[in-house]
Image (tube, rainbow, N blue to C red):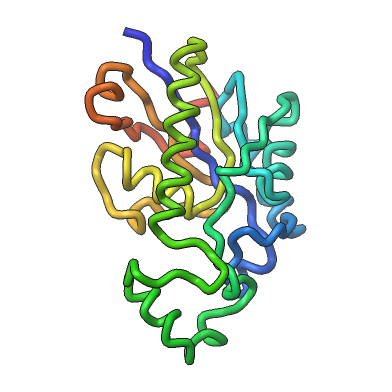
Length: 208
């Protein structure tokens, strides 16, 4: 039976994240170091070939697409954007240390969400709905190779929800410019909405 491979790739580095700031929907561009690192990874040939690329519309993702897949025109999808930290956007944990709601949010209290931001439940619902839509679209069109360039929080959450082997979100952490390849088998997908995580990105396998 035909299977479908989706490469989940985190965007390159931005200055704000390196400074410890919470950056979700803020439209920050790649840093110069981020651009340099991505070009180095791409030159190594470790990014898998693909026929179609979906991306978050935020600059750090669309700029990443241009570097690692320069010959493709990515399809920007709003619901692939990162978590909305609301009033906490652009602030560090130290700056938010006196905020009781922030402390409860850090402690995984799902009843709390950032002021003017997004609840954890809404975030998961949004990205899962989009991932399922993309996956089912690939199967309908017979597109067996695709890539999604998005954010670390999005990838970790999707793999925690759908990925085999099963793992917590923090166990799927990845550096900027890195990610995971997953295989969708229609029978498994239809039965239980699961995908097999079978490789890391970049990988030397694609140099062969």
